[in-house]
Amino acid sequence: MTAASAVHDPLHSTPTEQARWSRQIVAEALPGVLTPLNWSIWGYSGERAMRAAHFDAGVLPASQVEPPAAADERAMAIFYGRAAVNVDRLREWADLTPGVSGAQFEAHYHGSDRTRPSARLALRRYPIVAAKLPLNVARLPWRMPRLRARAHAWWKRCRSESAEADEAGARDLLVRSRHALHRVARPHALNNIVILPIYQRLSELAEEAGGADAFARLTSGYGGLEETDLSADLWNLSRGRGTLEAFLSKHGYHSPDEGEIASRSWREDPEPVRALLEGYRSSQAAEDPREVERRGVRRRESLQAEILAALPPSRRPGARLAFRLARSFLPLRQLGHNSSVQMLDALRIAVRTLSGHWAARGSLDRADDIFFLTLEELLSGPPADARERVAFRRARWQSYRELDLPPLWSGSPRPQPRANSERAPRGPIEGRGVSPGRADGAARVVAQPEDADALEPGDVLVCHTTDPSWTPYFALASAVVIEIGGPLSHGAIVARELGIPCVIAPNATRLIPDGERIRVDGSEGRVELATD
Image 1 (cartoon, rainbow, N blue to C red):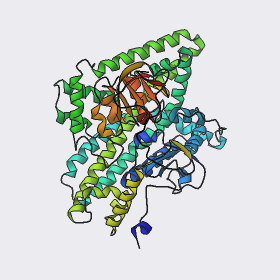
Image 2: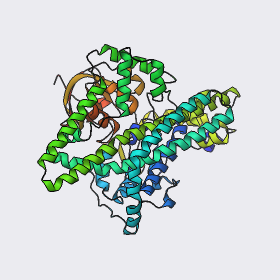
Image 3: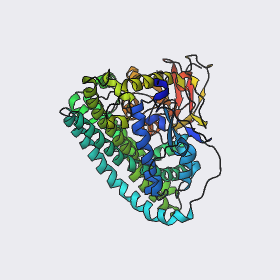
Image 4: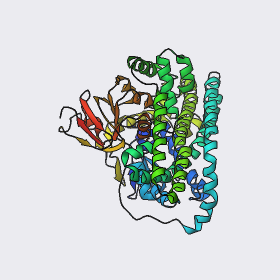
């Protein structure tokens, strides 16, 4: 029996139906080709969180909370090592949620304007939705901060316990960390459902008040984001206030590719932090991120006052309600995401402890081989054929890294060899503006997260996608161009909070020459070579 015939490939699904799949949004949380261990964690936990959240909203029955095995029935699946979401499935659930439509979901999260008929809320579930959704939503503003504090406490506990943990202790940490991830991921997914109608209402108010720029001001400036806290702590550290040890004790769960459990977090390898500090020190004119935050809050509050004054009295209560809901729920999106990332690092701590024991007794050739096994295999003990599985899956993983997938497809995707480095003809690049303003700067094309330390103050960051660990680089950049995302993506949200232009432009990392001066127009959604 050969490895190729006996070993299951957990990194590829084969759907039988022509469902619409998308890499948008999920690619910023799970970028690139995932390791088998990483997908075994997120493929179950992410799917279950989305289903449980729709159960909490009353949309799905309890019988549909447990993730199905068939790719066609899932909201998430993996193709050639890359995670994707079933747009048709999520659109169907959005159509069954009061105050949300599938079309709005697809436009805000996936940047798509595809038109197709929408389903109607199933009347037989309407009483269940009416009973469950308001109660569970009302709990989010106090529940999620409490869970965030528990997540941080559990992360610190894992760090201390792992040093003395034997193999059984490491496996126990792994189980408890997985449960902790489930606890924070479920309300985070419910909040993502809640904020869609809020964004839609803000979009309508912004359209009356002036369009894209007004929308950016209404959807930013809420203060208290952990991303701002992270940048502010780096800014203070670069100016001699605080210590690197204290910074890592607070923010060390981040990593250059923090959605991948095989990456090395800042607490394990602080070199990316030291490189960031050099950039902050060399940018003496850079503002304190907290001052930038305060200015954003003032801009939002000023625009809200202008909108209320311009509306007829009969419409003001509805607008005030939309502003209050936005203040309560929009900041929770990043808080929930950071909780999930921190719990992944707790899992990373347990996995590295377990891998050390397995490598020491010869179950693995190398400690990092463990990332080519699945979570189920880790919990049941090292498989007898662990080396065969690792060799087969590592080879597949390497081969998938040489392929590219389209951002959207139906049925099974058709992979193509990774595009070469040839550039397209010179000319403007049309994209989607998600944070307004205009800025010029030298393009710094960053293909991999670990290369982001090449960014100099005032450069334009050009990248495939971003996650919270990229936030400190935003504070150095004059603008950001991202290949994958939408108005609700991490990069768009942070760019609006920092007041820098941001454009979503497919293939930007291949179309924009590294080092060349470019002009980014986040209001019009255009990127031009400054020399044109």
